[in-house]
Length: 299
Picture (cartoon, rainbow, N blue to C red):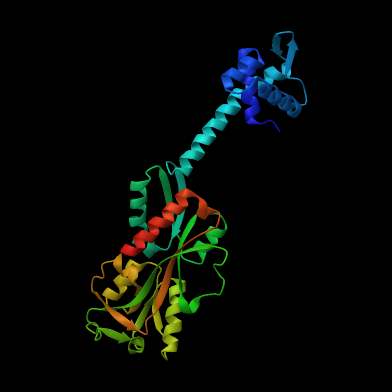
């Protein structure tokens, strides 16, 4: 294998015409230059220099190698500088995937802080709910997945292969029309809403709603289902039903025509940032995780 350090020595010898002059230019000893040239000729499998008395000239193979050495060393220098920029957070790219209520609350604060601290780091964002977002991380389609899971719906070991950065605990709150009999109540047992029409959210949240209602002794009559939180709020505000939404979702939408109520028993979901162990060591990814953590403390 031809090494970059050997190419640098060859270029110096070709430019100066001797081992001793090359040694002075490179800041090393003449025997070291001679040793490096022997190693390079061994790697090339052919002589690169012809020595006749005090005169030294390149063989045809040596001329070819010198001609290519300039481009190789320039490319290597550029690569080293780019890697150093990434390591020093002067450059870099992070691909982030998030669920919608995280995109509208945690992500903007985190990315604004990241851009202010490290303007050379670029972050792209796409939206996906778990488990799809977690699949994207494992498939190499993103670097960080903002995800959530409900305590009762956890699968043991489902994230054991990932680095899990806990962010916050998000409680579900009830949402009822302003004219609803329970609109002014401080706390509402979910069974008190058994006769209402329901508006359900994403599939994972919908499954959680059904489980909680069944534990309370009834099956919710779901008349509308949508992954769009503003649509849920709009349907409730129009008096078409009741819903439970995460607090993060309520923060990002003005509940016009609707009132929030505390629902008992309490249902909470764990909000986390996930990445792969090797990616966690990448400076830009680590910095993004840190900013997501800080944003969560302010949420």
